[in-house]
Length: 309
Image (cartoon, rainbow, N blue to C red; front, top):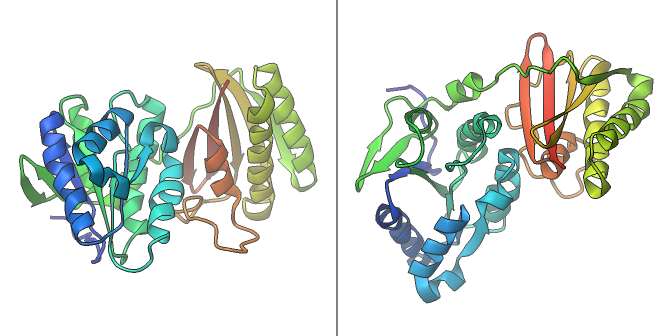
């Protein structure tokens, strides 16, 4: 067994289920036990499972917070600050229960790595807190590699009514395994910038994104993301960097690279503190983007963000 453990009182089991019956057998008692104990309960799962559980709860559903994870968690980087911490922080006393299902059949290949890192980072984000987060996995529709990763990111696996410790639990290994280099296509437009060129980098990115079909609020969001990351590059990433932008699969992709190394695995995933002035750049990028991918290492950091057209 791995030497990594989860400090109590945080609890983070994965639920392996094959069908609706097993889904309800694993989730319904979890919710009802919480309600009986007067614990705040939230459910953030894909729409079909959301409707299934809401219907099974009947009148008790009125006492549960519900979110469709396909919307609230489309970008996995938003889930910890915008879903899990947002709910848990509203209830600072006593235990909080959350069902979170961030990985479902239909997730894209680009989304999957950030999803695994998200599941691993939950263990760091909630260490020592009185929170239980149950994460369902559909064993009939997800492949064996996904289930293997779930065993690495969760200390306990519940399957067929049995709860067993994972003998491969190692969340830091999962974070490292999906810290993958981000290849850029040869046709991507590029703009190197230094300390006095951040506004020019933003203008370049907006012009290219508009040419590639981005409009309206999406264009404003991309401008914000580029400005925040380019500013971080000149302040913390060696004083300079490069913006790259291109279109792919109906989306506009933008990437900011610099020579710095991102040492905090939870960067961008902590809610801003009241009155906080700095340190919100990557958090804002997660909030406005459809997907954020990060690769960091000794040679530098690349942060890629996706915008649907």
